[in-house]
Amino acid sequence: MRPQVYDAYWRFAAERQAIFHRRHRDEPAPWTDDPILKRYKFCNSYRASDRVSQFLIRHVIYDPSVCDLSPEDVFLRVVLFRLFSKEATWEALERATGGVRRASLDVVLLGDLLDDVRRYRPIYTAAFILCAHNAYGNSAKHRNHLALVDHMFRRGGLGSQLARSQSLRDVYESLLAWPMIGPFLAYQIAIDLNYTEHLHFSEDDFTMPGPGAIRGLKKVYSDFGDRTPQELIMRMVELQEEEFARLDIKFQDLFGRRLHAIDCQGLFCEVDKYSRQAFPELKSARVRIKQEYKPATRPLPLFYPPKWGVNDLLTVKSAHSPTSQTVCEASSFAPGQLELMSVPGSAPSSPPRRSTRQQATLRRFPRGGDERDQI
Image 1 (tube, one colour):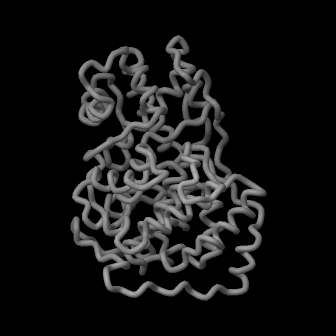
Image 2 (tube, one colour):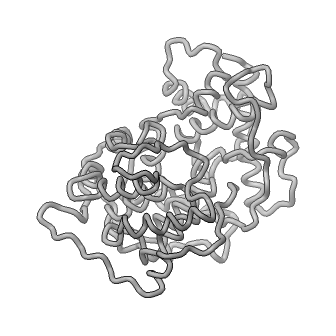
């Protein structure tokens, strides 16, 4: 272990979360005295607080307009959104389909739409490096991803696999079995699916570090010893209260929710970036922080999965924040008890008739709506 970098992990987690709370309380900038945090862009200590995750939770999973969807339709929406992780791309897909779901997933028309969109702006986020091979015979990556989702959610596909899941690892392995889904992306999608009201697994059940987290682990630990990267991440989950107390840090958690494995994994990635400035002598494949911090142009009212019991504890409310009256009140299902749309013997639904306006959206996508910064 490198004690100085190890302590920096906890200090970074605390200060980045303190910045989050100061902004949430609408305090004036600057929100930190740390020159590195002040200058550069870093993800939140809690993954669910980042802007793209907030968009996913609020608009893809819990938007009131999709409250009546089957669990399988919700899962499809989550997977399709995360493959692109781009808010503007999702909004284009929603407009074109009248609401993304199995019955409205026309991969040819949506492929044409995205052909048009990418002439004006990127349709993918830069956050993930996605496999670009032509698994479904298309030269364009987005057409292969659309075909993948179409294949995933055919009768007896991923929806049925998720219905049989008994743990977060089961969800991850179900995703990993599909083409174009690597280990880190499978883990990220598994966490996203677990935000829904249809899966209820502990985020500490399983973790899978990405390349950035591995770089951070190697900076914190000079030698892993006999522990795997997953075991080291889980150790951080276990030790958090003890380490904050040792460093005399009053950690402001997420309204009563402690750090979980997905958060501690992400923090290693952020500490890798932070160390490029704080500990430049620790060499890795990345030597600088690419993105400088730019304040978001629009405020982001917070909203978390209702099952966490966090939303009622938010100290600052927005007039646009969902309330218990406006979010979906989805049914809860025990593992293996999901009621799927594509059950054996059921007839597939017919795609809804598109309005003239929706057809026009397919042909051309308007400018605007770039991906937002994180909080």
